[in-house]
Length: 462
Image: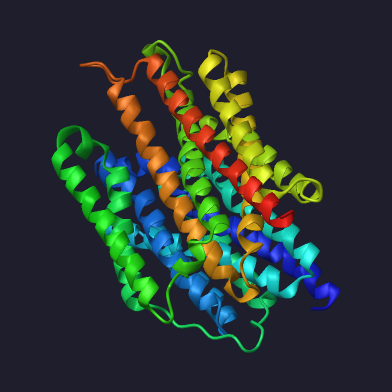
């Protein structure tokens, strides 16, 4: 690819990754507004976020497999067209069911992140592509921090339709950008979608995300929730068997069995739980009214501003990581970043009586998440052929989505358990308990990453 074309390609990849992440996260700050505008319960409104995560988790491996074939450009354009159509459904004055359909279509765009990485790896010089892939990974995380305050502000000024209108504008811009800048895939590629595997995976992920979102089910109908959890595990096992037997698997499960890939995905899963847990704790704590005896009673928009340190320092960490990688191996960067996130938990547990302390904890979280996200692709792609870039990273993003969902659910369960009878808000000590759980999760992530570093060192220096 010519240098001038590469110069245009890089910002296009970043912009598309940022847009799909920001649009998928629009459901978070708008849940209360949706419940009020459409006269539905908060539980029903929560599905505007859950359905986007679900469709994204299912679409990611499918798009990753399609993106590994000769029609990657067409796949990217068609997916963005679906996202734009979904964005239009969220803006039009239609019933709530159509809003959910639109949010599901928007969530499909989450599968494009791995395809952006595949394009970078195929069409940029090796050293340049590694840095760009790291930044794409970071941008896909901090997109939530960009979209949250903007959506909240628009919702306060013009209502929920105005907030979703932002999504329509930026997704249309992303489609135009892709049409003008996305190159064709290299010749000689082939791709087939394992339909049976996709259906079973969709069913399993639906149960996982449903159980993660329905917190009342665990507290009121524990036996039912446990039964559904067992069914989800069985479906995942069935899916793994299907993939192992398929000649054209949705995800190369055999590759996942490699210690480096398996360890990286385990670190992503447990780390994802911890990272999203802290994000949930801080934003919820900031919005808790003073009457609870703690909290700051911030509006949705002002609470969204607390995410600014997360986005800024996450991007800074992403820019620094490629330079640090020349001296420190990727698994060690994962371990260090996980330890930093653990430090954010410790800071939140020890000091949260001042709003500045919440900003500081969110900044530490952002820096840790940025470094972790930037280092993760290097760990996986070091043992992955170029043609399998999209597929390998797609599986990692499915793992991340499930981890994030469980992190949110675990936070909700701990805070619910810490809410006394007749009280609307949990005790302040429940936040400390949740923070300690998060420290444990990040300790596991750090140890897993150190084990990966030790293994790579022994392979390099036998």
